[in-house]
Image (tube, rainbow, N blue to C red; front, side, top):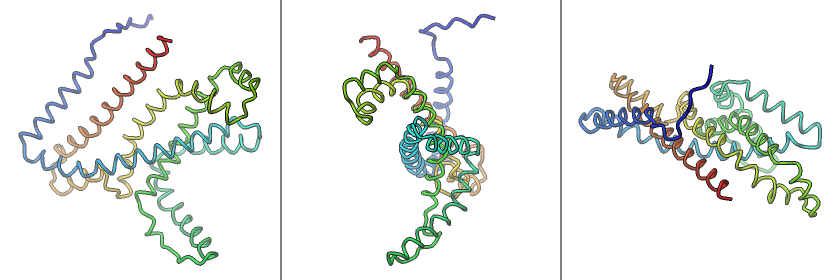
Length: 266
């Protein structure tokens, strides 16, 4: 069966429907004091959601790049350790990683810190001194680094071998080849899926609520438990996440279109 023909000027009816829903919920916020009260409460968690997302994504991207480079290492041990990490982490649900890091890894890290601190004369700390928000950030970093590493690996492998050989012929060392030749070309392939992972992380950041971190979702749970207006509360929660994710998705599509147009112009 032939795929339906897509018109490049096809009107985005889905976006129109989302906008209408947003307008309806926005009107409810303006017209209904309950909605306004709920929105005022939940917006306090937006800062936490944004902070967790940005820090986790930055750390996961850095670790993911290191893993991607490790996957292409000339040393077999490094390649195998990298593959082991990626496959294990990708096979574990994110919520399980959150719980494992928060209640198993964090105490172990505190014990390690105290052992090392004892060698240099530092005072010991307790597990409760390890903030839950940073346990959540570490868990999301570990989870997403495995997925992002595959994005980087595919992008780096998309660079033609001839480009790398030409860089070698010019006398560039490994770091110079990566910085001046490989990465600038790979980033065009990397950006779209990397952007999708960022949007996905915005949504998955809601899982930190299981640790009691006061993000949008946790504040929604607390608010609904207090006023028993679950329908109104979770409408506002959904509206906040839709605003963030759809706004980011549209911005990323525009950025990708800009990259394609610039490539075409060349």
